[in-house]
Amino acid sequence: MKLGELAGSAHALGEPAARLEITGLTADSREVGPGMLFAALPGTLTDGAGFIPQAIEKGAAAILLPQGSSAAGGLKLPVLEEADPRRALALMAARFYRRQPGTIVGVTGTNGKTSVVAFVRQLWQAMGLSAASLGTIGVETPAGPRPLIHTTPDPVGLHRVLAELSDEGVTHLALEASSHGLQQRRLDGVKFAAAAF
Image 1 (tube, rainbow, N blue to C red):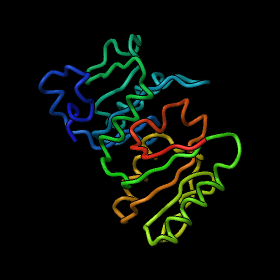
Image 2 (cartoon, helix red, strand yellow):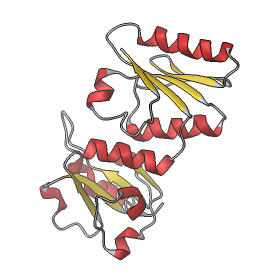
Image 3 (cartoon, rainbow, N blue to C red):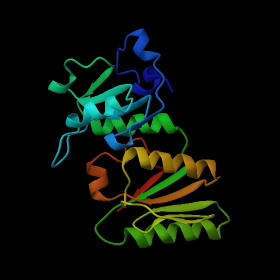
Image 4 (tube, rainbow, N blue to C red):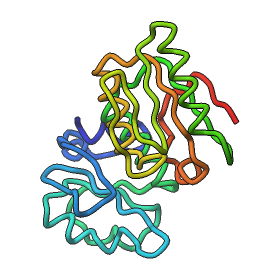
């Protein structure tokens, strides 16, 4: 995907940068490969900007930074600066992976998310629909279960899973929307049909 398409209309990229082919995106410098966009997000304990040199060494083609970051100075590759870089990364992940099940329901709240998501999936399956669920116990699909590391994966991982589910023919998805995942903008770009609390 071209960087201009990935970044969206909010960025006035010069022509060479806009045409740059992006092969993937990540906020983990250890996962960077040639042609990828590295999202240097500020964290609780460390700032992703400190890992820019490693990302560039591994072939990063572009960097996403918080607006006004001092790390942008002196970089010789395209830099996207965003007031809310977590949201920007989630929306870029949605654009990059593109596909999602047609009906997605999110369930949030302190207690009961896992049960409600499982019930919704089971109801849809009983109706003959190709349904899956995603959350604390992993991803439950018609083909079987797969593990997840977090209740709500990071936005790149989440949108990758949504695309995979869509490619597998899943039309309905019930997912747990943890408060942490919502606060960190991990679910931005998901096309929800309904939400429950």
